[in-house]
Length: 341
Image (cartoon, rainbow, N blue to C red; front, top):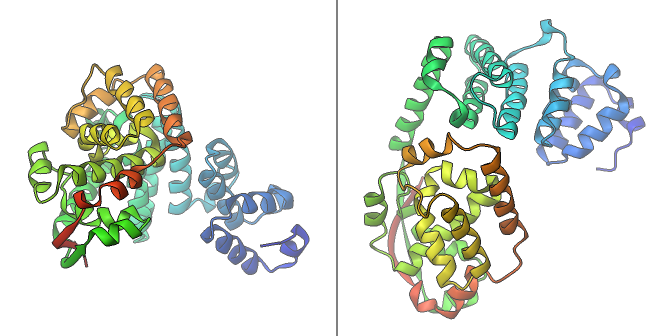
């Protein structure tokens, strides 16, 4: 959108806000920041200040987000304001590996606590869930038992939120989908997702390791490896190795490593192997056991992982599709699996 500041200033307040929201929906975060900062913070309405704070959050500039959001008078601070400000503090907690007693963590919790209360009063369930997601984001660095003492109402509400999420996951309706994936289809497609889809929806990464292995039995070992590599890339490219091991996806680390090696993606295999070696040659398959290890990570560990993340981000070698195309017979499929309705 080739919008000048003069054109923007000529809009009505309602049109200005709508324009910024449309820019946000289309991912033009930097355009929002450029326009609103050129207009000047002192000239922005309260809703536009909120949008500028959100844009800074989305642009990973949390300190500026806090500066903008805290410039809004207290009488205008609603549930959305508390969520946006809490998110900014939560992101700083992650960036700085702050512990539970840090000022940043405590400020985040105070903001989430107030945000949840206001969202509950206003019946804004989506905003309440967003507030809880900030706790999700910082959970590893929290002392939840102490938090339950310090913020009993918040933690009780958060536990209800977690229980409800689990219940919804169990109740999620699924429908059968039949697929026949032939050698010919594999040879002609460049979309590995279409080849991996049956494994993605069938192999269970959310239970025990035995559950994982049992659910993968309908597939070849190479198909299992392909699925593991897909999860590895998805998580590391989104939030680094820390996210990969923190989430349920950490259960596939051994298969991802074996798959990278088998598929001749040796640079990435060596990189992941060095991560595993750093932690003593093995990482627990059980998520709660991994969390116990992750809680002890310090700045040195995060600095090490940052370098390992960069290897994945900058990798320019062959990918899994090369092996798949060279050995299509290992990835054929003819059967039915379940997908969300």
